[in-house]
Each structure stands twice: as structure tokens, then as C-alpha cells.
Length: 42
Image (cartoon, rainbow, N blue to C red; front, top):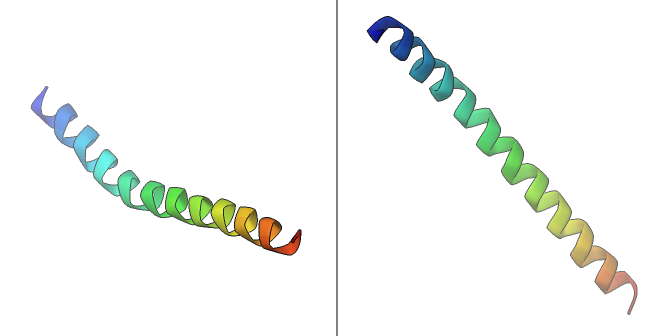
């Protein structure tokens, strides 16, 4: 079970960084579009 757990944690470790990066990029894009839309409508 130790080898399986090690593999799972390794996969999670490699998957965490791109996931956080994509989530942050999407969040910034959505906020940016929302703010731009509000400013444009004034």
C-alpha cells in the first residue's frame, strides 16, 4: 500500500501546481472582464 500511496501523492503534487495556476488565471480573467464591463458601461 505504501507504493500506491506514494504514487498517488506524487500525482497530486504534480497536478496541484497547474490546477492552482489555471484557477488563478481564470479567476483573474473573470474579475478583469467583470470590472472592464462595469467601467465600460458608465
